[in-house]
Length: 301
Image 1 (cartoon, helix red, strand yellow):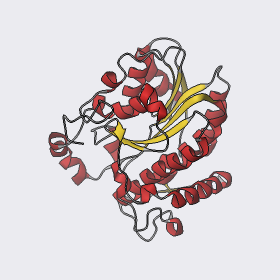
Image 2 (cartoon, one colour; image 1 turned 45 degrees about the horizontal axis):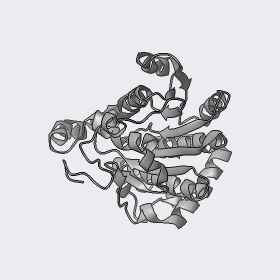
Image 3 (tube, rainbow, N blue to C red; image 1 turned 30 degrees about the vertical axis):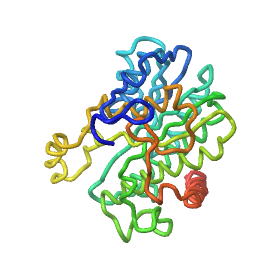
């Protein structure tokens, strides 16, 4: 969407998280957010707490989560969750499940980006494991606690288009034969999108919804793993195309909290409106295959 232009929702590229949630009352609502301690997660927590939500904040370290939540006042709860360690994910999910009440929003925000070298953990490519598998395990384990009108918001990216030929490389998920930093990141972001599509299919008719979000290009800690050349070019990108963090958090906050977004299910959202994904991002057969493979990976780990 062009800067300044607004879509059918009334919001657009330059809208901020505070703007898209203005007038929304989240008192009595519980929102779980991964990656609470920096960037989009921190801004989303701040704004949704400002609207009255109780935040369940997840970070790799509980102390970091607690420190990130401290400015928002009392009542918010920190949890440790290392998404690349499924034992940590399961322990976190069980701890969250013990909290009173249902969860109104699962905001799957955390991630790592563009690792310059191929990195494996437990036999899996680290971006795919962290960005997709960890969130898949967390969300599916917590679905029984999702409110009757609950929402799942998965952070994808326009980078989902930078995938191996054919989309998800099921025959080479670790990209042993074709590793490139942005290809690997793109595969993980395509997985986030396809997860939302498959989950939406399973939630259809229940009153619950699942959607994927492209936040825009934002200068956050997500870029810490980028190559020196990419980091050197970042100031130019900021000047030409990047959103602020407040603008970048807008679409996920809109998807999580705005009344209009509660009627949208299984879509790819950008600039607070339904957007067009890549062809692979609309491939429901690929999405179902990914769901099955993800279940197998989670069971094996």
